[in-house]
Length: 349
Image (cartoon, rainbow, N blue to C red; front, side, top):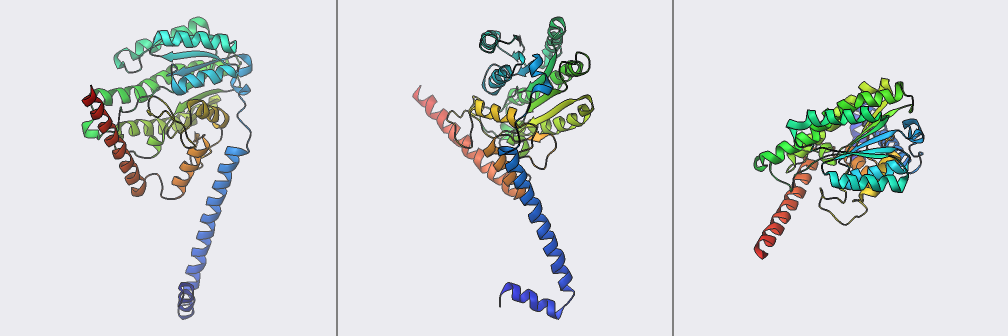
């Protein structure tokens, strides 16, 4: 006797079971419809819906974009691509010589204005002083800022149990990713607001904060970094609701692995884009949810990351024991390989 025959026979004996079957069928159909529509929306976002128009953010009026962590990787690429769209750029990072060289390159290559401001985001004692200096620069130069890219960030040198995380690394991650980012954003918001409502050089302003799959999925062996990025996601979405009435758009951008110094991955692949590929997809897609179909003012812009995000959310879920165990095993393996490599290098020197 088949399973369905058994159900039919049971309903013959107990007619009330028919109502249970109807409810189960209706719920299953509703779930299938919801998942199908979500996947269709994902595909439309990635491959059909038009790219972001930056004119409302003032690109044609050459308003200013501030990029933190601008000297390398994603930050450097954000600076290039925003300048290419017509924005003047203010580069913020730690090393003055690197910033000066990049600033001169951008001004020459894209025929825009470019300034830089050097500050150490890990120095908690100097944060207020450094941010006050940035505000003075903005005010003295009368910069109509309409875009802020919160890109600066720090992760662990290698995956590590929380109990073995050094105090310096723990403090730096929280200071850079959270405290400095929040204070920096708070200082820039009045200028973003003024550009829209006073100078009227843009219809809207924009805050983009670079998040991570480590904040989306609790990530054992990167516990401090994972927590810092989860904090940023909730903060960003909360801030989005507060600033929306002021015509300031706030989005958090979720990324999986990217070739960078932070990830220590040099070779790109279908699932690991270069900074240029990721930033291009971000600037094209940030007004769409892409892989973050269930999340407000959140986007997973790169196509393969979007598919991964959607698949996880639609199956086991980001907080499931399955996802947590897989994440744990992956990062334990990465840690073991890193330790072996370090031991081999130490032995050869």
